[in-house]
Length: 152
Image (tube, rainbow, N blue to C red; front, side):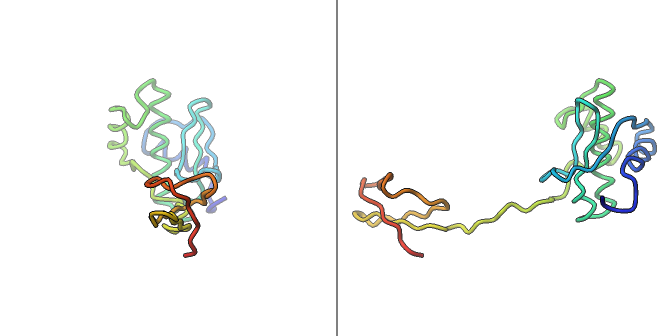
């Protein structure tokens, strides 16, 4: 995957250097992650990292995501508050200079604001819709007249 480094060794190094605790579980890339930089798995204590973090923003952002996930990891194993809302988590994030959020990885599919245009045949009210509607099934909400599709 990204870079010429071993993710497992990088996570172990960051854990030892920043948290002064060993990382004893698995760290892997997961390219199926869409909007998040990484995640900590409660069940098997593994950490999954989105490879787009390194590809889009480089090593500094990747290290930030790893530190964030290690905060979850170490607090969970110690039986402390490991969730974003917990005071223990916020304190450890601040102490390790870990980022609260990852930079955006995926742009949402921005559709045009108006794709379909409909008009009531009786009162001439115009309807703008992103999705197509069945004009046989729906009527005007103002006067209950029939609706027709209008070309843009």
